[in-house]
Length: 175
Length: 175
DNA sequence: CCTTGACCTTCCAACGGTGGGAAGCCCCAC
DNA sequence: GTGGGGCTTCCCACCGTTGGAAGGTCAAGG
Image (cartoon, rainbow over all chains, first blue to last red; front, top):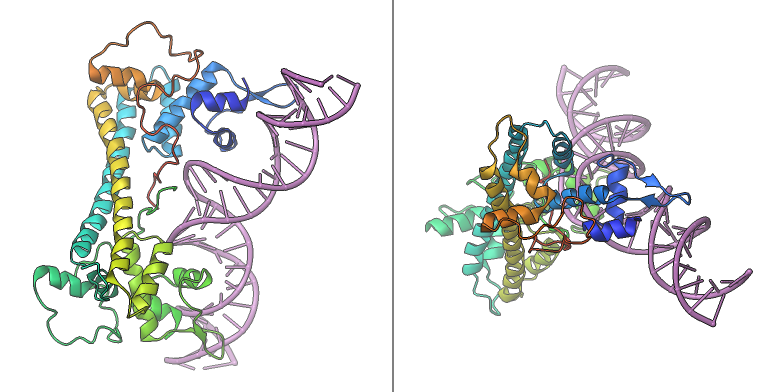
């Protein structure tokens, strides 16, 4: 079975199969006389395992561990569960981050008239989160901070802006 | 104001400021005689706008559009709202995908004894999603598909596996 | 036998954002 | 004038995936 057939049967693209081989996630495939990679049904089985794990969001390094346990028939299910738990907490953390973004954005969207006028709380918030936060809390920007020049310097750290310096999460899906 | 100061004041790293300049997101900074980039408070303001937009998960291309509208005082807020809405639906889609992953995984984790025994529904599902799906629906795998060899070929498309060929979403946050 | 087209091979580049680091110049305080 | 911390440019890495170019192979049909 050549790589194209294995790809179809497993749902993993030929490109990715080669990549997984190159990076050592899967063992090097045997070759035909002419140099074509040759796959057994068992190989395809493994590829589908990988595909499924990817679908569940596991990183390649995690999949590597899972594959090891998969092959080890004397594994302890506790080890598998541990990896899965670590992963799900990552998933939930990413969900929380995205939900915080979406929540904030929804408030701003709701406050935007969306007509021909230029006034827009969305831009206002991007420009100066403090103001819009205040808006949300009903306080009309106490004092006369001439914030539009920002020469007063770092008020960026003010008013719990979400994660103002952490190594942020991915933001765009692979399109 | 040099790049380091601008970075501190804006919350955007010097590295990223240079990157944004290089990619055209922000205009090229003026230089001092000795070649240092020089930033005005207004530049810092723009950088903070960008930073905030990134915090809300906007992609750089989207930020580019937002910046254009921001600078255009005769903009229509409808245009801003449109971008924000498009973005929030992306956010929600990613959330949905992650939640589906987390949901499935949670079921599997709940079903895993997590002890010294090797039996593990997590691995079982990765190996053959159909079985575990069946498990969830109470149906005990009808018929005798010898699915563990998979030589019957692409049953991978069987039983609504989640998104079995789409251009998946990012899976790991930037650590 | 030869052509054709669909496959395979390797290699190289790109995407989005970000960080790390090297080599070399600059600026300020001491 | 010297030292340490800025700044500059440049290249590399991450992660997973896709794309393409250049060349070899296979199988079917003429």
